[in-house]
Amino acid sequence: MASAWWTPTNCAAARSTRPAGAGGNSSRVRPPSPGSRRHLATRRTGAHRFRLRTDRKKLEAILHPRIRAGWRAQLETWRKEDCALALVVIPLLFETGAESHFEKIICCACSAAAQHERLTARGWNVEQGRQRIAAQLPVAQKIVRSHFVLWTEGSLASHARQVELVCAGSDGFFTGDKF
Image (cartoon, rainbow, N blue to C red; front, side, top):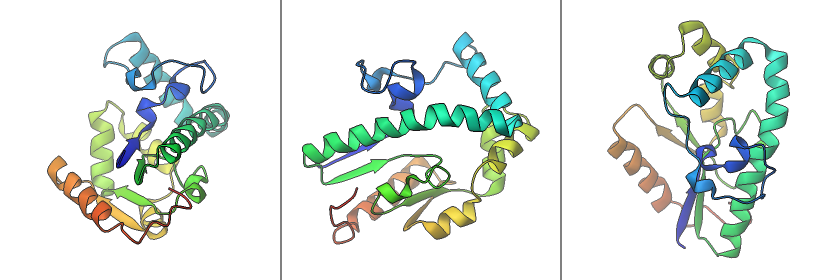
């Protein structure tokens, strides 16, 4: 395997009450369909989670270890398969202290206006969007702490090209001690 990628959407451990590694095909886990009961429950939980910081911290203490176990297990599998390059998408990388597990960090960033527009398009009101953004490290700090930046306001083709450029330039950047 030349390269691989992982996202929290594909992590069964984060969307299940089963402990990480309890079986099941994580590639079949999908986000809830808009309008479904699961989607509405997820939205209610998300709205509440960002409104009350103490509740958010409790929920994060439950979810983040499961999510981390998922991507760490996948990284170990890729190491055993001698994967040359692995990309792991972690939305709260710096906020959870996970950056130490990786050799290089690619920050996916956009303007504050684009962030608000995307949250609104997902059905969050202005206040809920503001709370979500406020719960994260500011984008400018994420950019400074990263080795590469992908600007995500362009087309998907533009995003793909940016990824290609980062990966093409990765020869010599990655020593293999970490992914």
